Length: 263
Image (cartoon, rainbow, N blue to C red; front, side, top):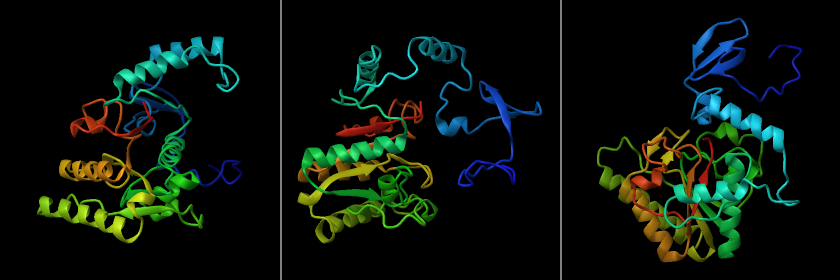
């Protein structure tokens, strides 16, 4: 951005590069220099930049509909897409809601959990990132910068500890984190008031830390015991980025709700 820019200054860029186009894993600047792109659209471009098949599909769709509002009429490709996602999704997940971004989806997941359980509260974990809309900011604890200047944030969000991946005794660390979760349910949000737990199976901005298996299994067991819905936020970890289609598949668990995007 220049001094005369009309762009909001909240759009921070880690490089000063001005790019004009990309191909595969490369981007080209307006002055013709090529750079290897390790960001991939913040993990959105799973097939790289300007993949011919993706570009062709976008072009073909633009010839049919650019925007078909689903509460006016149903787009003919929505049902096949939902069916394909049902084939890919873990467990019995077979019903889908589409939105524009990961933050919208995490908010929608919490709204669904509250509606289904008739309970008001949500539990998140230290170091988590769930988006930058208002409710998602309340659920995000990866850095204070996202939340600064936006108080008061929505109420009813409680933060439980996440195991320290650097702890020497991982069994003890998991036990401590689960104790912290249990204590939260006893001291701050009673189980009968807790609609859901939302967890990134691999912490994203919190350090790219996979959750210990014993920790996830312990959380799921407690959720089942108390009728709390378990939401897996796979916005950053889904669609093959961990070696399986979704990270929860490494743990052999079935979330009640799964959030997916970027791919």
